[in-house]
Length: 261
Ligand SMILES: [Zn+2]
Ligand SMILES: [Zn+2]
Image (cartoon, rainbow, N blue to C red; front, side):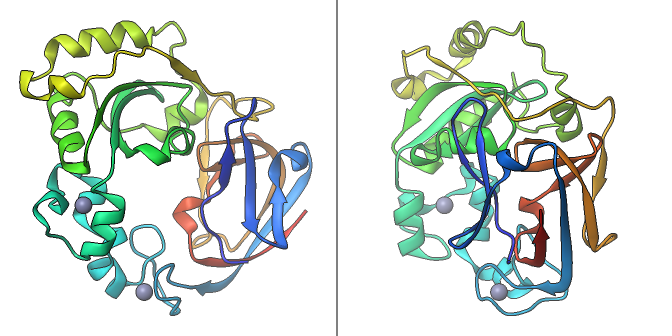
């Protein structure tokens, strides 16, 4: 199969599916069992399907990384989005994906972080980040507005996740996200206040992890084509093998692998 990001459903715990169609595996059923992922050496660009020696971003060949709308700078930095001005790498893509309602949120990953996502990506985006909990701060009409709000919030909160700490589950459960939300409100620029969402519902997310390790060791197919071990957990887009070895599936989008369970 060609790897793509794990598909998730917000069950308790989260359900994870690897692969698709007839080649799909519900990973929750494989917890506690030995699995093996063997890379064939092939990487297929997730955009143009051409083989590439190296992948850029999350599974792009170099050409697509530089030209595909899915890899444009406003994906990582929403404040750079120009869709509202009728500009961008691909106007159809920008209109469909970025001239749409967006959410600014606080998520509890290893710390409280601020983030932006398209409204339809809630709660998928939170699960992909491995958040233990999340709360919506604001809803905007487009990606640019959400980006500007995020920039304002960056004085209070990071927009990065320390994935190692997230995987060790060092999150302080005592954090009250609704309290954080109203502190954030006081700091918000007044021109962006219209987008604030009053609803204080917190989404809690449980991951299928049998036992959290004390330290993690990150594996990649580039340094180790055959990866195997007992599947001891899944969080964010990571598999835990033999507790401490972790494999980021999303990072290997486009890699062709044989999967054995
Ligand atoms: Zn390509
Ligand atoms: Zn954009």
